[in-house]
Image (cartoon, rainbow, N blue to C red):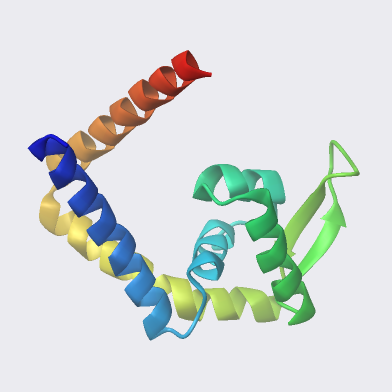
Length: 143
């Protein structure tokens, strides 16, 4: 593997490890953290949208949502456009739980991004977006 690819995997893995450490520190499941992250600050989302913004599988998201529903943190409501598609809505208890877990993480991210500066942040966004586009294109060639 070329050195640049090893470095990319290294930093990518380190970032994932940091989020995994945060979840462990808060005594929550890594996947739960990302579902709450997706729901935080939104009134409602569908399972499909959560999958799209987190990269988690439908089965994983469904399992997390079921657990959150059992604990009274979310409610399911029929979709506005497609009544078969359920809207996942944080309850008051769920919103508080999410704020307690996710707000401190967002504050840490915000501070790190501020230190980086807006130019570097924009470069990072542009580069990751370009990588994702190119990787998707290459994957489609192999299908």
